[in-house]
Length: 69
Image 1 (cartoon, one colour):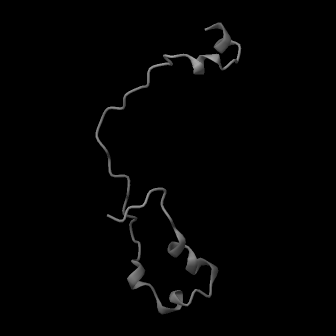
Image 2 (image 1 turned 30 degrees about the horizontal axis):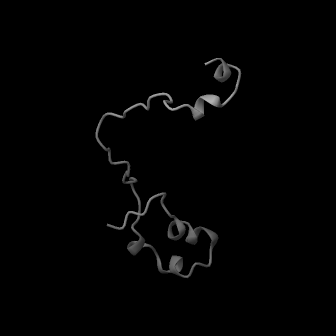
């Protein structure tokens, strides 16, 4: 389409746009266990006080998708 080559957007309103690419392959587990990491249950008692700035880091991490299954 000539309009698309010149920066136009008329091609988005056509009945048949470009075919979507089909993704092949299975789902892969993306979560990786960090080496030498300390569990939240095993951390020192001073961390539970949340007095230092770094104490809040792991408690406030929210993923892009909820994983409570």
